[in-house]
Image 1 (cartoon, rainbow, N blue to C red):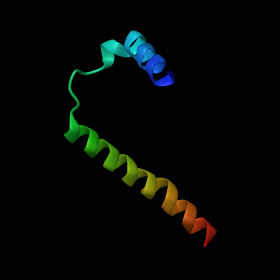
Image 2: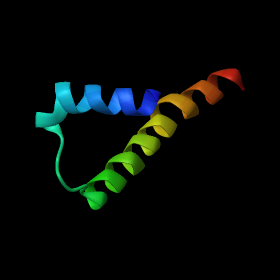
Image 3: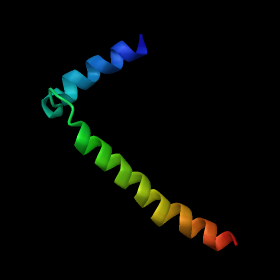
Image 4: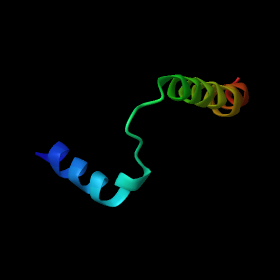
Length: 51
């Protein structure tokens, strides 16, 4: 029920921003870069301070 309701809200409010097809190459590259940035800028500095 919640999934259906949220899908309707997304389509009503953000439908003009949504693509018809998913660009998997761009999505995979983005999330790999995102994870790498988290590791480099968040996890590594935090673990170095605690050592």
